[in-house]
Length: 209
Ligand SMILES: Nc1ncnc2c1ncn2[C@@H]1O[C@H](COP(=O)(O)OP(=O)(O)OP(=O)(O)O)[C@@H](O)[C@H]1O
View 1 (cartoon, helix red, strand yellow):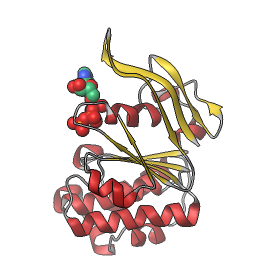
View 2 (cartoon, rainbow, N blue to C red; view 1 turned 60 degrees about the vertical axis):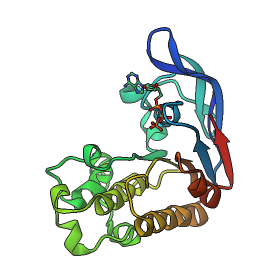
View 3 (cartoon, rainbow, N blue to C red; view 1 turned 120 degrees about the horizontal axis):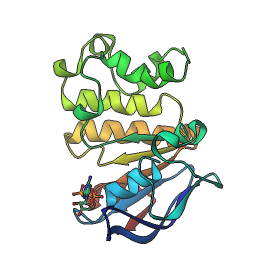
View 4 (spheres, helix red, strand yellow; view 1 turned 45 degrees about the vertical axis):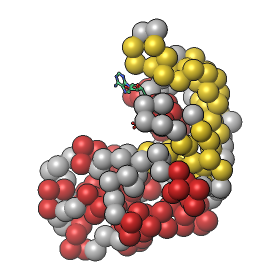
């Protein structure tokens, strides 16, 4: 279980965006997180993804309370959680090929496993993998971002509006990739979306802020 308990967090002193909320992301299931624009869904993603320290409350990964966030997050906990954001373009190095984008977490952790099975799973051909971000569509780049998020086989995956910029067929394809991770590897997924209909179809349980 990836969980946040009593989370209080924000950006400006004295203005809490999250006001003591609890979020539980169990393994082996898709949990949805819905709510109107600006209610703090991305802030939940950042805190549970260990990218932002909450002002109060705690985050735990499989029962271990996290005490470091951002650069001081312990590697084992950081790599246990994969993240995909709404906009793929600012999330990648424009100089990388898509192959390098997907392989980057492996390189950063000194691992050199083949990524062909992964790139095939997310629907990237060898020809696309040689291209750089400016030579592909948002959907193709988002496939690479999902591949990157799965490269270290995270036990949890946070999808923050992953499909908001994509057409229906790419959305369906990426949802299938995530569902397969859940079924085959028991990954616990937090699917954040303002699209209630998508979450109703995709998630077993939907939390609302
Ligand atoms: N870096 C930041 N600096 C200051 N305020 C921020 C920052 N990021 C978010 N906020 C504010 O925090 C609140 C919650 O933002 P957040 O992005 O978590 O909401 P959200 O529910 O994900 O919204 P959306 O659905 O529009 O993406 C908003 O009022 C927003 O203006």
